[in-house]
Image (cartoon, rainbow, N blue to C red; front, side):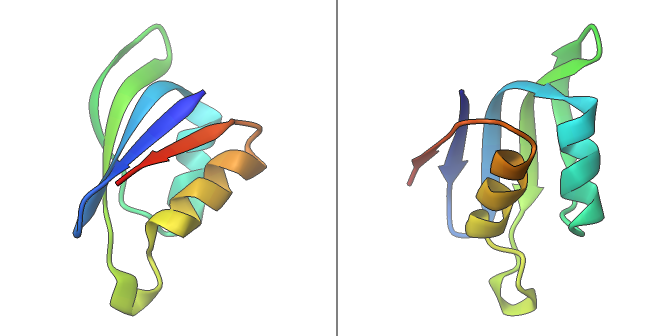
Length: 75
C-alpha cells in the first residue's frame, strides 16, 4: 500500500516504492524528488504538482496503480 498525501502544490508519496515505479512516474513527466530510501527502494518522495500543465495527484495515483500498487489518498 502506498499513501499519497496531497497539498495544493505537491504530493508526498510514502511507502516502499520500487525504482520501476519511480521510472514510470518520470516517464509521465512528473518531477520526482527522492527524500529517503535504502536497498533499491525509496520510502518517501515529493512530487511537485502543476495542475495547469496536467501534472495532478490523480496522474500520480494512476501511474502508481498501473505499476501494481494499491494507493491511498490523504488530502
